[in-house]
View (cartoon, rainbow, N blue to C red):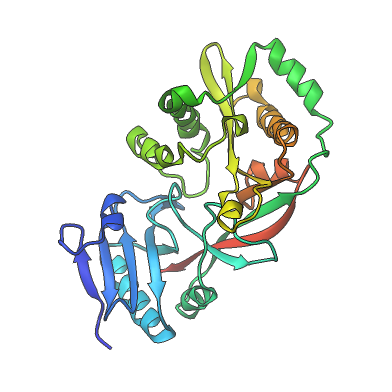
Length: 314
């Protein structure tokens, strides 16, 4: 089998998605038997060094996967990368992770999916787990967090207000969410900055898919300080089912003692709104194993799916 064809970002056959996501190269083996994109510039730091990323991954069989991944690792090593991470489409604002424990729940809206053999492709080529992520299900919306009345009173006395998302001001509301995200996510694992235009480009396609009752914005002195972003599980509708589930995608707030408990309050208010407006379940989606969101989730939900991000020395 031939060596993978290397396409640079300026090549006319370079895939549009990889180009839009600023990949440094794209490898294609044979008649698309295996493919991936590679990033080595402007990537996240791990232990003070930039990582290489393998994303947009697909392979039909073990042999093709071995040839592709061996070539990818050599190219990343040539570009002075000492640790390669995958699957990762350049950064954690985009698609990344393999499903490594499926459970019995069907896939939910915007959940990453992969054939099971992709996992063995990476393991056979020396990749080991770098980070674990979980999704958890709450099917009893009567559960409450007893801390919330006290937190709500304290934050209200500080002048912090919470309101629903205004769909009429869709783009302006996204700007507010971005302002919180760019600060609150800085300490996240493998964080890289994302400019405002790229952030808006990711969220604008969701305009017709959101329900404003499932997005809450917290403000203090006319400044956005936190939010919770959830949306209906449209995968249920696509399967011909009644949409009874909400996907909690993100909860974030600014750091600092004055905002202590705000994340818990936002999640609690989301649960209340979900129950009051006729949904029956909430999925807390794609939480990093050590993120505060898992601690919040434990008050309500039980993990049902695991995902893994892999790495190996280059």
